[in-house]
Image 1 (tube, rainbow, N blue to C red):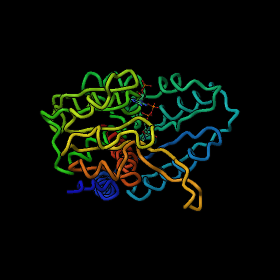
Image 2: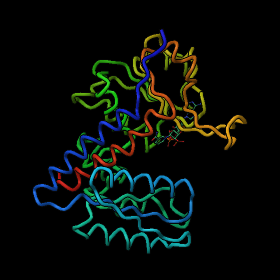
Image 3: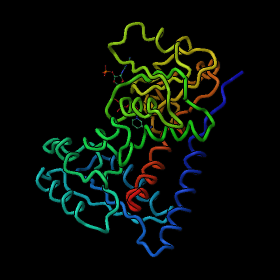
Length: 292
Ligand code: NAP
């Protein structure tokens, strides 16, 4: 039987609808609407698209947002000055620094400068350190999106074997920490696999829940998946496709067709984890505004 498709678009819409209700209730107390400030430095076309999506998502749930555009020639001091100004502004609930930054600006230095309470991306060293201790101000959006997806699909990771392929600071590592937490919706036994893992297929076949966060198109094949496993595909890879007008197509890290014949549930790409990331950014921005 083919796997159940986990519909990230619908789940993200449900999360956003819940956020909209909570924003309305918050504003009804006389508070200002949560406000997200996005620093966008340089002219990376994909970053401009992502930032415009984030701004629109804020408006749809009743939040306000602004984009602070800085030229590709911006200096590190100029970015740091902007971060300091936003940190100090009581009308700014959340700050997001869109990556990548121009090469003359050190990303880690900028992330270090963010007030962790306003770091709604959850990627500042302080938030990642607090995540390790089990209680960040804001968990990173994509990993917390994966947990929220599982929760809303009724898939409880507790007691399960989870294998995450990928150990990036953005996805793999924080996701492993969240899933291993002694907490509802987590409490899993987690393995992190990477390019140094020997016999990757043997490791992935142990997974009750398999998460691919590799950035390698269709690298997880059906023989690497235990029958009945839940497969979460974080990957977003552009491949050539002559049948498309653009000549390109987005695929995940999972060989979707064959794997969906083996798995019990699977996220598609597009329409899986991707939409959850922005939804969880909104959750974090609301939390930043309320201070809880
Ligand atoms: P990344 O920083 O490039 O990390 C990739 C990880 O996968 C690394 O740890 C790497 O291992 C591991 N890896 C790569 N090829 C492998 C292989 N053949 N076997 C085993 N491990 C392998 O990527 P990322 O930022 O985590 O992103 C991963 C994917 O998720 C990308 O496609 C990205 O576009 C996507 N993504 C999606 C969202 C979303 O909203 N859906 C958000 C963020 C990222 P080593 O450490 O050994 O090199």
